[in-house]
Length: 276
Image 1 (tube, rainbow, N blue to C red):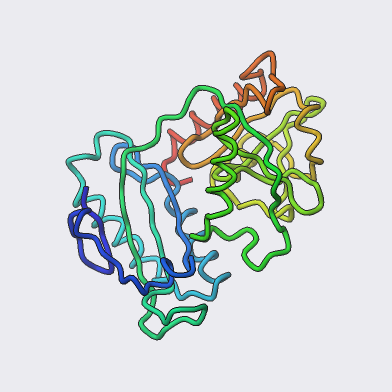
Image 2 (cartoon, rainbow, N blue to C red; image 1 turned 30 degrees about the vertical axis):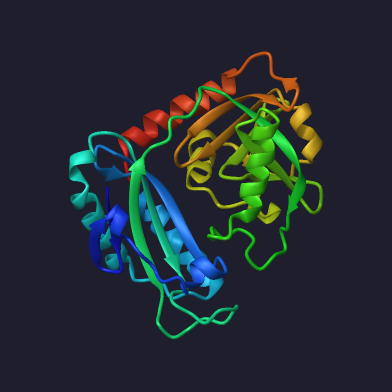
């Protein structure tokens, strides 16, 4: 597939950034992932808004909205032959070519727009609670940065224990999020998800599920996972994915009725409006 990089469309094997790019050397960058159905990115406005917000949080200067939309359109047009199948769209913005170390250089940011086939998720997931935490008070808390090493380690741990996603608490012992997902629980008949103050990412799918289902945000102790009647994950590529087990503890009915309803509502509403 072809890649848009700093204004030019090139073949994937010709796409290059400098070995001194700050995104490579120190993980100084932000990104967004959106699904593309029939050539149309879902919720693109929300994704571009969050990219700009994450960039501000890192002190990066993001291109304006029109420039970003043009880059996306050019990348999609260059890959039109592959657009019949669902695609994964990724925008990455980095600190650009910089000195080795934490200081940024003066070259300006690097912007890349890439596409790949969309991941096919299992109907239900097993998640594993990992022994590491999210720091809800970190400088990068809530930002979608390219510094994903914590997530790589956590997800590898989950897979070593038979899971397909890891869940993390924050430093206060409250449930936070997955490595690439937000988490919802049904507790005493109420659909809840951790608040942004927990340190979790402001997921686009999370926000839409909140709007469309009447779910509520509140702090959830990590142990509530074992008290929940239902659990599901949300993300831009998995939509609503039921959880059938947390570690060795299984949910006898997965998906449960509230999860089923959330999945149906999300599928209906997201299909009706590609950019809600």
